[in-house]
Image (cartoon, rainbow, N blue to C red; front, side, top):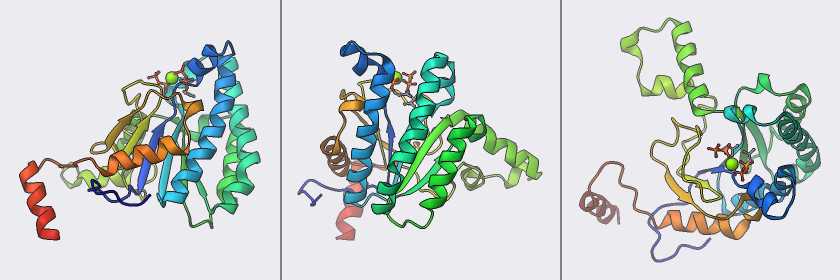
Length: 248
Ligand code: IPE
Ligand code: IPE
Ligand code: MG
């Protein structure tokens, strides 16, 4: 998107999305919740395309949380089957768009078919140099931080040697920069245990649009709005403007 006069921030390198509202979207149509999940795949396709076209480097999608394991078994099975069929159905298009797939979460707890499908698409897209699409699966921020602490304790590191970078380097994907922007659909305004470490200074964008209705224009609008936000990182507004003027 072209810069507008009000833009102050560069394009976000990393956008994270909590894809929410599938169940309500389906219920509003008198359908089963799974119908909403199936329609949400169109939104994933649209957002991947929009992010790639804009030049966003990383897009992380919250696809299944640690807490989602407490949903009815039928819904979990349907979500896992949808993951497998979508990966198989989209891989050629991902490659055509230069999209590299990665994943984060307690992948061992996923059904074998999911792990195989993920591994296959990750391997086939490993050489792609465009957008990196990250699926958060069986993921939660507290799980990730707990795993990081375990790794550090196992390493035998002295307490006084541990700093923020130590923790950062023990997160699931330490080479990926923190998201500058988080989008959550469906009107809910909470993090639901997503990327708790990485979202420390992200800008938050909440939209009432249900995930199955979310399209390229919604994504572009969220990025555009982000670009006009004032990110202070603890400084005063005056300090910020002084730094901006000095940089011009
Ligand atoms: C998000 O939609 C998809 C997942 C959590 C897997 P929901 O299934 O949470 O839909 P609502 O929030 O109940 O409408
Ligand atoms: C968050 O949505 C998880 C995903 C989008 C995968 P939920 O619908 O599970 O979150 P809560 O339960 O409303 O907080
Ligand atoms: Mg929900």
